[in-house]
Image (cartoon, rainbow, N blue to C red; front, side, top):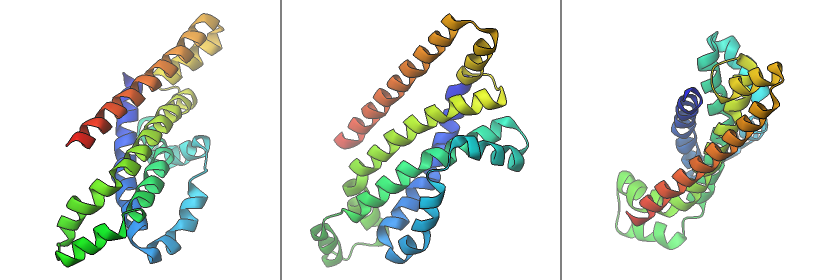
Length: 190
């Protein structure tokens, strides 16, 4: 449960930062030109690099792990949200202009529904990355959870528990992906 709680906190933070950032990248060419190089530099940085920075910034393994998850997991959400916003058909934008929709109505009636399929692709990818990162973060910090257990069993040379941990990581990752697909289907029917 420790791992799932950490993943949910880091993932929520990734979505809270990544979704608005993706929207800004999608609607503003100036913002994209200014920040795309920074994003392309930060995006491929390994969790093994973010974790020490998190430990320096926060001084404790728990917030450092959550920071690491958020930093690694937000990029698919950012990029897919931006792509979704850029892919809104011009006819939708023209109709919004003709109807003189306010910014909030445009956001909730046009932009988000049109970009939602792209956004959910990013959300699912981000969730998978969050689950991958927690294992590395817990292994490196020795925090309790699936990664900490795996590392402990490796140090104890209990190979059957190592295989059990790997299987559990895969099954939980699969279940998280299925859960996200259920949420996606619910949003599509609304």
